[in-house]
Image (cartoon, rainbow, N blue to C red; front, top):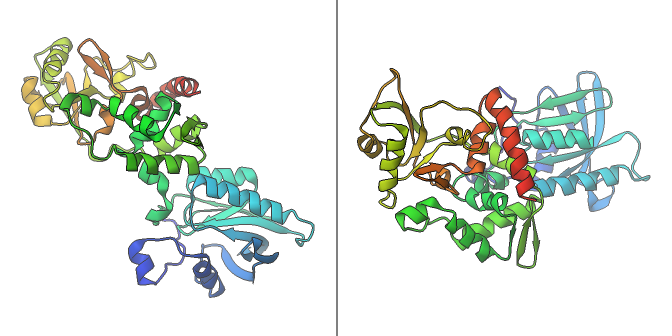
Length: 378
């Protein structure tokens, strides 16, 4: 279990899960209500060096103690964190700042990548969820794994997973768009569920595209020049997509059919456009992209397991199965599919995500595909 920072008793904050304001954090530091065991945090001063920083914090670990000049931000985006680090480093290095005062930032949430970034920049950081990297004069403290309890401080979790993440994936297919409308139309054109079911996904709307782009710009993944949009950090985009990818909600069934692979794909092709969707999983598509040899049996995403089993004359079994069906109600796996005769392969991004979140062999295969995705997005 990871120790948690002090909870906030204010009912409205607890219900809305909103990050506290600067005044609330300073008040709790004064009263010793913000804790991170085994460290002891003691507020020494507020607004050290004028209004440019929030204060000075003394951190004790046993007999060791260090003093930190800190700045609090109530959002946790990459852009905000990067700017806060630059600000606190500059102030801590000023001649008027007394000696042996180390730079620190406090934000609502710090993921593993953010902690690594802070450590690389030699800046300490603590969050309000029990995660921290504290670089003292004679000690080093690292703690991660505490979940993000602030929904409003985690824009990444809103735009890098689910249907809204499809707008983010578009930049890995085509790194530049003339406008927001251009991006949206591109996303609609890559949506297999639009093409086969003749219906527009309700979440692939301009408003959602605008929110996704704003988050991508804030996280310094996309640059905006007037109406034009351009991907500038494909590696970070891939990292955020990987961190938020999940198999949650998928139902996997091994089955046996008398049909050959070609016959299975032929039957599936005949019902395209009726609402029954199918595409090879990312793992099942790895051979198509030449990065990994997979099992001979097809592994296919479908949106209706019962109908697909009937269509393929299959029966669920764990004894010598020759077919694997993965039911999902999500539109995401059916985005940017690649067709080869009757077969539909998962997109390169979907394939990379499944490999990158798999075992050692899959992760190794993902590296080759990742290089291709980054090269193609430049």
